[in-house]
Length: 450
Image (cartoon, rainbow, N blue to C red; front, top):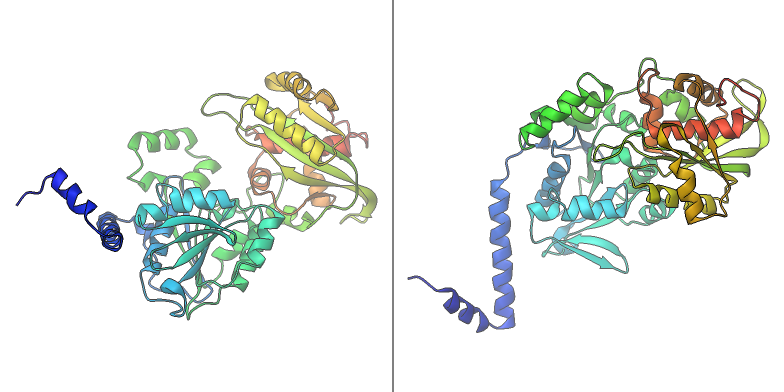
């Protein structure tokens, strides 16, 4: 017997609120089951049979390999499995940690590879206690970021969990703190553990994880990601074939120290500090993007300062020390770049905005002065090669007198993977200009001064 749409609508309208709620739940369950049965994983998205207590399943993969997809699937299966703590609503209390809380919501919950894609019954709720992904059973996952000191404090007080998902772990500004504080609360049930999804980058914390015997690692390559259109894969492989970008971003290989790189991961780590001392001078250094359009380079924007005191470095000489305070680089329109640099200038009470005007960077001064004529702005021009300008700054790091405050993952990646002769990335260039202005130019180092 065929039921018309009008007849069906009439039947639904006659249902009581309780019957309607039951019908909606049944329809959501059917939709979830249909989607669940339709998914076919890549080999690297198949989780291990067992993850040790406080251990990890770590998915390393190139672009488009479905790392987020695999972790979202795992969390949904976890929720629909045996309860970790029967006393809790739904039996599960989990956490999702991403570079920012917004990333956690967009990528891990709402995105095309997030929780909702695997289970349409998931809802995103904002409450006075935080932001949560919730299931009809009452199971929940609280969303955290790992970017600011406030994020770290929220993680510190984040409560106990049975499962933690770390999304794009290598891109987290405060990865070590995120691991430390989440591990303190990973104690619900008999087998609390981590899952993680990330493009591999040379972060010390990530390298340490891969060497632990309680971390199971799977790897996916962009060339094998058959759900990504062939034209996209061919373009990426053709453009970056044989480069370190291809090894890391496409083949999911975790690179450590690069032969010929001026900065080493160990050197950056040894010079790292948790906070900067009193500073006598602060600059915001800008390096303009050399290209425009869809494949534009990044605009480098680095905030750095010079310490007040002369402190012995690893060589035993008392020197002033330099501190990279923030990395605001990214792909953005010129006006947005100027506004971001001006905001940093006022926030840090900087002494100047210093901008390179090679490669068409003359626009920076015009835009900065138009937005805020009170800013102290000046230009530098590169008359020497990038290697000549970068080597003295790299030497400061090795001597222990140039420091990164906290963690600046994207900048650190560029520092430790750039080899002279390659085109230098804009974050690195802005960092070199900042440290040159603060420490080398005042000391009369003409090899580094434009």
